[in-house]
Length: 203
View 1: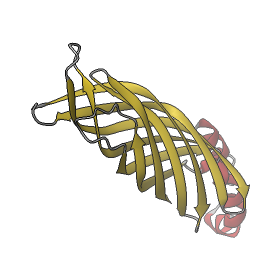
View 2: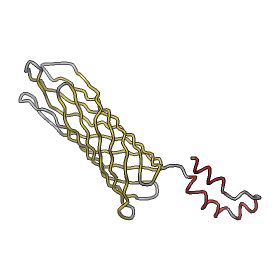
View 3: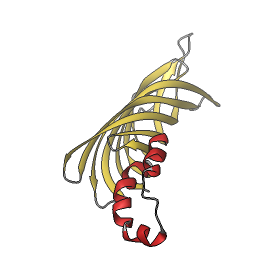
View 4: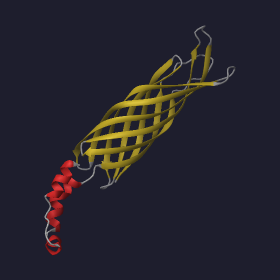
């Protein structure tokens, strides 16, 4: 901001008629420094896989679908900070009590994340972005019969991602994203991988 103000102070300060004549040159001088960062909002949909323990008495299903909402701020064309929310759906699995009694149920895995990203433009309109950060993952578990009830646990987990995107215009990008984190509830912990098709709008 200080740099932007400094450059703005260098803009021509003359009478209005002369200002109108020199407006194109003034914008060229002041524009890049005075521009704000690039904000964007996006939506992703896709498939995910959560690793859970399995027991013989209850069906095991590691696959689900998810929705991802994210917002980004890019202070530089190559770097951005992203906040996201993801609902990874449900997985079926089980565990055992400390006494050895097996139980099954459904895992629910939503979470929030914060990452920093580096974007590499490797071809006209194409870019590759790598991300790393942390996620707050709240894992819920709904017991299956003959048990009842539910438990939940929130943990802080690492979050990494890789995405490839194509700019369809100055404001829109379409991409494919791969993200990975972990979840935990009770004694069960596992990995979570997400594959998304995403659309991102910059403003």
